[in-house]
Length: 243
Image (cartoon, rainbow, N blue to C red; front, side):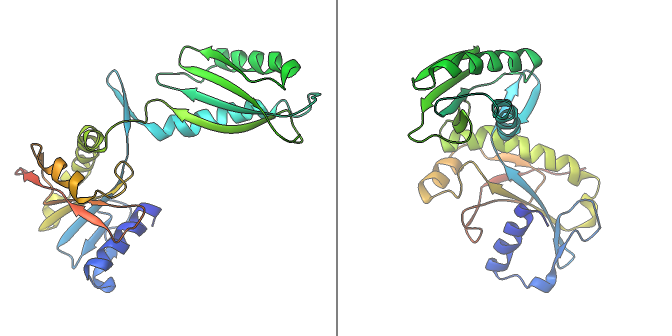
């Protein structure tokens, strides 16, 4: 099981289902992820934020991971550079941004220029959507540049609004996977590990359910908290028929 599947299993056990009746990947490496008693199929997915770039949709964390590796990899190339003190490097970015050779060169140039003023706070825009910020450290490390923190300007927003924006992406993706095997089970559930709301409180749930319900072929959609997998919220849906 991956981490999300482990959390959903914990949630199901907390509901009172017997572990012997919960089968992980009952049909091997295909849909569904779980089956209960051979009658209920459960699909599992992360519920995360996405960036819409034209017709392309991608999870925010894809760029978060890739840009971190990209920038820290460049910082590591300065390990042999002579330096008087160390400096934290923070980056602030938003989408769209392409991790290109041109961007690498722009970052390298900014880092080379700052080597002579490591004792000064400074910021430089290396791309229209990427700013590097330099902050002198209190102690000298074994390298001139040490990664500090990062800020993703696309990650902010209101929980309920973000849920409404991103939930349909997860639902449609999982519906497409379930359709080929829909006839095999009496009921289909979708369990989403919620990395947007991290477990809705009563007010957020009421606000979410006050909006028009999402239409889906699933019989249940459950939001499971990654902070406490025993916490889950079943949201109001409008069940549609599948032919």
